[in-house]
Length: 134
Image 1: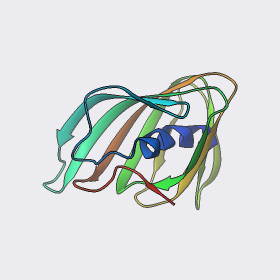
Image 2: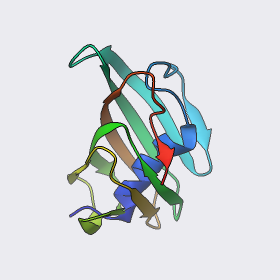
Image 3: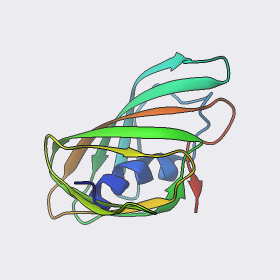
Image 4: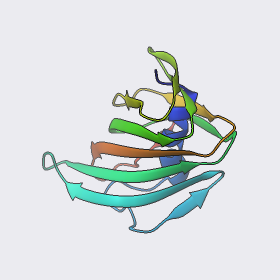
């Protein structure tokens, strides 16, 4: 089940405020979140880019409501988080759980008492911010 903790992974993206076409291939840390770009590929169509990231969320970190200009899919490697997605509800995620946040749908999160590690894939429109406040 998805929860606010999963949202924390999304927040990682929002905290970075980077453009989908200019994601830097280096680690970045922001307010309890650290993202590491694993791979970025043009496509699946001309106006989209697919970005794969490792997201590390510090214990008890909160992720503000935000949206993405495309789909976010994630898989929890370790830890646990709660992800709140408008129209879906709050999901409690643990290792082995996956989630998706639909295009343009606001979501937020709250991490648990342990560090959480997520692998997230974003298929988003080129030239738009990867995440925007909601």
